[in-house]
Structures are given as C-alpha cells and as structure tokens.
Image 1 (spheres, rainbow, N blue to C red):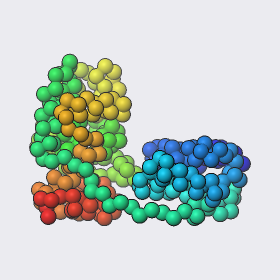
Image 2 (cartoon, rainbow, N blue to C red; image 1 turned 90 degrees about the vertical axis):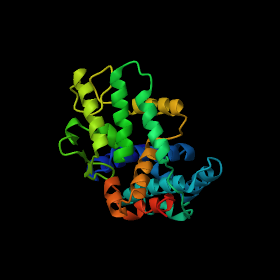
Image 3 (tube, rainbow, N blue to C red; image 1 turned 135 degrees about the horizontal axis):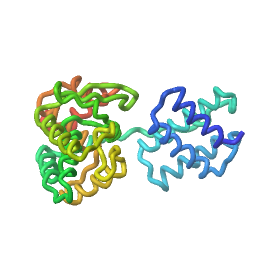
Length: 285
C-alpha cells in the first residue's frame, strides 16, 4: 500500500482520535516524509531494517545528529510503524533493529539576572516607529521572563486568558493538552495593563491577546521570530524564546521557590524534567 497515503491517515488519526497537537503531527511529518525520500520507497512493503539502519547511520555520521535528534526520529517512526501493525499493514516493527544512543545530559541555557534586566531595558528603549510596538513587545518579553510561557502558549493567549484583577494567566491546552494557571507579580501586571491601554487605543478587537500592528489579527509566529532577531541584534545578547523560559525557572529557584512549585508553573509532566534546573543554578548550590 502507498506509504504516503498511510502516513496521511496516521496524521489524521493522531490529530483527531488521539488528540495530539498540530505541532506533534507536524513533527511526525518532518520525520516520516524525509525517511521515505531518503530510502526512495513508495510502498509500506518496502520498509526494511536495512533502509532504516542506513538512514539513521547517515543521520548520525553525515548530518551530525545529536542523541536527542536521533531519539526523536526513532520515536516518531516507531509510533508510525506501531500504528501500521495495528492496522494490519505490516507484521513487525523494523525499528527494533536499532540501538539507541545515550542521551547527553546538557544543562539548560539561560540568561543571568543582569542579562535579563538588560534585555528588558533594550526592548523598552528600542527606537520603534510606533508607540504601540514598545508596549506590546515589552509585554511579550515580560511574559517570557516573568511567567515562563512557551512560544506557542504566548501566541495562543486570548484576551480572556489574562485576569488583571486577580493577577493570573490561564494557559489553555498547553503542551500535552494540559491547562494551568500562572500567578502574575505586580511588575508583570502593570506591564500588561499598559499594553492593554495601547491595544484599546488602536481599536484592536481580535480575540488574541497580542495583535499585529497593521491588521486586526493575532501576532504571528513569523512576526515573533523577526522580533527576537531584531532584539538579539540590538542587545548583543544571544537568546531564543525557550532560553527565556529556562531563565524564568532558574531565577525562581535562586529566589527560593521549591522545585514542585516551579514544576507546576512550567507545566512539566514529570518533576524529573524540572530537577535539571537544580544543577543549572550555581547560586542555589
């Protein structure tokens, strides 16, 4: 049977039946499609331990995959072939032939407290063409650093998710389809209040919390990517959105927060994921 048709059925099953996020399904696509192209196969019957092993060897030696990339590719293909077995298209999972590499135990990259303060200063004082951009962009980076939001969570925020009066942020269906509530400190609350004033002044009525400047619609992933690049160049600080999330967790730990509370705020499935920040914080040790 045509493997690409099977893959499409698998994506739909993952999205609509199993309830996986679009990001997860897109990750499956970004792994299954390249495997088919590299192995030059079009039928599910052509899948074999040999071409699986060849692709992973190529990835590890030529593409310089790290252990995490290797394991992500392995898991995605294994889930797909397990589904094919249940559907009766193959009898055995060819992924069992592979030996998994040992994961490198890397510490999460973060900014120092001084770098985080300087970053916010640059964002606020940047020479924008429109005043709206100053308050919106400052609110975006404040949410990363004071609430530890993921990029996708920030872009999905609705106006109704921010409760200024009770100083809380409601994260609806974050990673792993989990809801959580994050308390806001005074500084973040005042920052978001000021942004809302500018938002109202420009008559933005879209349901998304963060809006584009020129259109009455939510801020886009491409727009955020351009903003990060712009501020990175202006500040001279090398960072990504997820690095700001790591900074939030580490600074919380250094301020005396317990690891369980940090795990809840970060939305981690397993507290073991959070314990890596114990090793990342020299001040805490």
